[in-house]
Amino acid sequence: MIRDNDFIREKSIPGPTKEEIRCLVVCKSAVSKEDLVVDIGCGTGGLTVEFAKRAKIVYAIDKNIDALRLTEKNLNKYGLSEKVNLINKNALKALREIENIDILMIGGSGGDLSPIIEKGYKKLKKEGRIIITSILLETPSEAIRTLQKLDMTIDVANISISKGKITDRGTMMFANNPITIITAKK
Ligand code: SAH
Image (cartoon, rainbow, N blue to C red; front, side, top):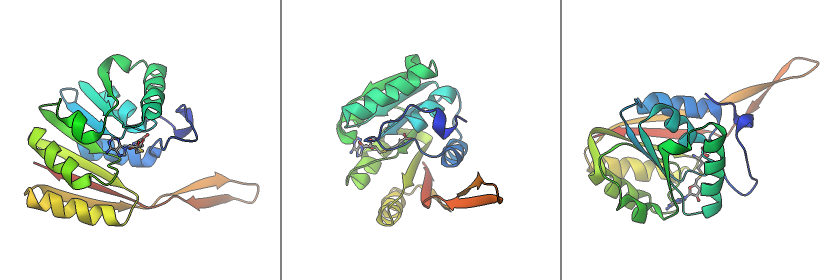
């Protein structure tokens, strides 16, 4: 797993997803080297890079061209750009061009969460997984409702992580924001 500080970053672009959260997402996705992964809302490319290391091919989608450029920089840094197709479109438009998805990662949806899940589900292979990371309280309930309608098997995990900072007096813990990871299987 790549350290947070080893990603190239820009102030205006969110991410990278914190290392411990990337660990859990990768683990829960059960990604293998045969998989086709779609990363919706690639941002800094934190998750795109981790999936590119482990999957057959990754489609990284972001509506913000600056996010795609930053993701590309991070892919180049780790020699992974050949495995990734970068698509500068809204998620719903981009999904039209993609079939046979093994893993659909949704890290940003901009108010279109349910339609993205529904459209993605149609493109998802049998046994395919949808993973949603959320920092907002409203997102998990909308996601769960939509995934239930599609009759998917759902796992919900709420993660609160504190990281230690070593000081002269001892190790002081700093809390990160809680994140919900929803994993659903077709
Ligand atoms: N997982 C990323 C961070 C995601 S930030 C990382 O580890 O680096 C969320 C991103 O989702 C933002 O860059 C935003 O532009 C994008 N986004 C939000 N809604 C979107 C949509 N409907 N279609 C495409 N991209 C979207």
